[in-house]
Length: 253
Image 1 (cartoon, rainbow, N blue to C red):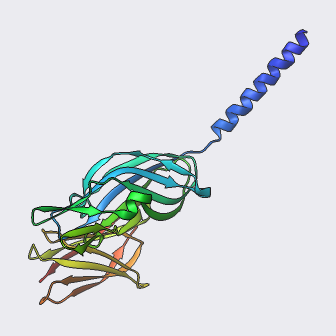
Image 2: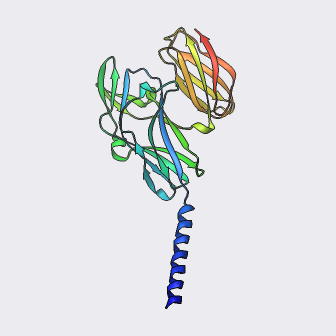
Image 3: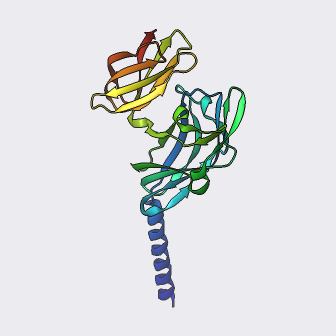
């Protein structure tokens, strides 16, 4: 009987140790999502963020811890961003980020607030294709770069629709270019063009500053296009390094 008891104890201990090994070998992937915006011609663009989901391999979906609430996109431009969600994933593959919006979305123009309809977001959320492969133990931070200027569409009769134009930026593998346009208040669009003719856009803010983010390392030309009758100005051979913000200097009009 003693031999049987000893055998059962050893067997139980072996199963427990095996279970511990399986648990300890389980990998985790810390994940954070931040949000920023390119300046636009609005007093405010408010989005009602209610949830963020990550879809991994095989279609498995995980809900992140979300800082819910109303976000004015105009408050997060030219390098300012905010944390909207984070969590820990068990899947090394991220296929899609899904933003779930509520119904309190508005745009403010000339101090008048208008509702922003979001038909697609109400039903299935704003789906952003990512296609990331993660490494265990590394904190991944993805920046969602809204373009408020392109995201708000006037549909007529004082009604507006939110059709978000969003670029996902992996901050650890990209750089950025900043600069200033004078005189302050000059409204202009800014386009960064790579040597392979890929373009990235932004706009100046009320102070004349601009920031183009999410640029792969390389050489770029910057074209600043103000409103007529002013003519565009191009700055050539601007070098971008991963993790660094390059100052393109001051452009005079």
